[in-house]
Structure formats: C-alpha cells, structure tokens
View 1 (cartoon, rainbow, N blue to C red):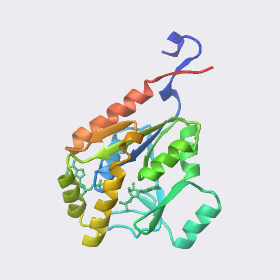
View 2: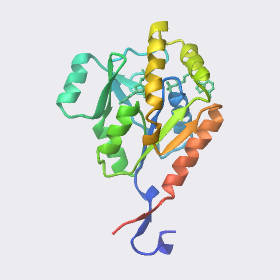
View 3: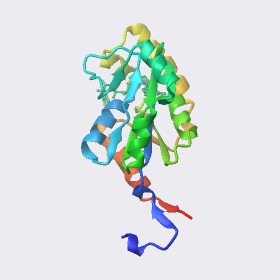
View 4: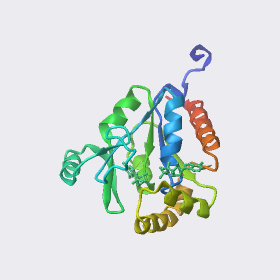
Length: 206
Ligand code: ADP
Ligand code: 5GP
C-alpha cells in the first residue's frame, strides 16, 4: 500500500500510538482493557506502579507493580515515572521506559489512568500520538452498583470513589472520545473502532 501514497504522507498506524483510557472507578476500564489485549496483538498494557495493596484477583507485574512507599519514592527520584498521582491516599504512576520503548518499537500502548494522569500524558510531549478515551457506565445508578458490586472496597471507600467520580466527569471536554460501557462486548467494539480509525488517520509529514 505504501507505494500508492504520495510523498509527505503516511498513516498514523505506521508508528506507535498511546491510547489512554480514563473514567470513574467502576466504569469498566480494567474489564474493557483486558478484552482488548486478548484480541489485538499490537496492543501492550502499561503496567502502573502503585502503593495500593493488591485486590484478591490482581497479579503483580500484570495488573500493577505493587511497591512500597520507599520504592515509589525511589522511582520518582530516578525520574522513572512519566507521571504519577495520589488517589484515595495511595500513589499510582506510569513507568516511563516501558511506554516509550514499546512506542518506539512500533507497538501501541494502552494506559489506564485517572484524569490528571491522562492530562499529564498528553502534555508530556512523548513524540507519539496520544488518544484520550473516557469510559462511562450508562448511568450514575449503574456506576454506583458496579463499584459496590465489585466488592473490593469498604463502604466508606466506595462513597469516596463516587465523590471523586463526580469531579472526574467534569473533565470529559478534555478528552477525544466518550465510550459508554453498557454491555461489555459493545464497549470493547467501540474502543476497537477508535483504535482502528486512529491507525488509519492520514498524517502529513515533512
Ligand atoms: P474500573 O477498572 O473502571 O474501575 P472494572 O473493570 O473493575 O472497572 O469494573 C467494575 C465492576 O463492574 C467489575 O465488577 C466488573 O466486572 C463490572 N463490569 C464491567 N463492565 C460491565 C458491564 N458492561 N456490565 C456489567 N458489569 C460490568
Ligand atoms: P484502582 O485502585 O481502582 O486500581 O485505581 C484507582 C485510579 O487510579 C483509577 O482511576 C486508575 O485509572 C488510576 N490509575 C491507575 N494507575 C495509574 C497511573 O499510573 N497513573 C495515574 N495518574 N492514575 C492511575
């Protein structure tokens, strides 16, 4: 196909693209990302470091790097984090090297972060396209139901997560796409459509 293109034009998908998925706790980010990764060989998940304790189903190195406060301090001091934030008293950060190396090798990276992280990744001038996707459940009621239904937080922590969610929803205008996660399969197909379209975007170079 490349021999058909005029000079100074390429497809965005010829290089790596960073797909950032944000949205309130319980929106279904982890569920959607897990389905995407199993279907798309070019996608890699950016495993974040966190000081939060693991949930029963979470695996170190797959879902998060679960680190001590001291280790997180070291990561910051070494400049190893692309961005980091505090959420509900725990720190979460994106390891820079893993993301940049994968993008450089032409792979696409999917990042699961809260809204400040999404903003920071866009402003980081990675030298690669950054696509910001905001995931929402179909209603506020359904959001509350899912956070409670996951059963991984105390009632107090759930209430605080819902309070944070209200604030996060105000950031939707900063995003490129809004995806409703009503049924998981449909939400995954919507995100896949965005990924495919972004890869086919025409880029004028030079
Ligand atoms: P997040 O990563 O955004 O916090 P999760 O992926 O952990 O959200 O999903 C929160 C809860 O909602 C989980 O128990 C998950 O199984 C459930 N869930 C996710 N998507 C759907 C959906 N489309 N319909 C019903 N339940 C869902
Ligand atoms: P959880 O405790 O539910 O796994 O995550 C809490 C919030 O932190 C979620 O909104 C999640 O997307 C966000 N988060 C996870 N990793 C990172 C990260 O590396 N950076 C930022 N900024 N947020 C993150």
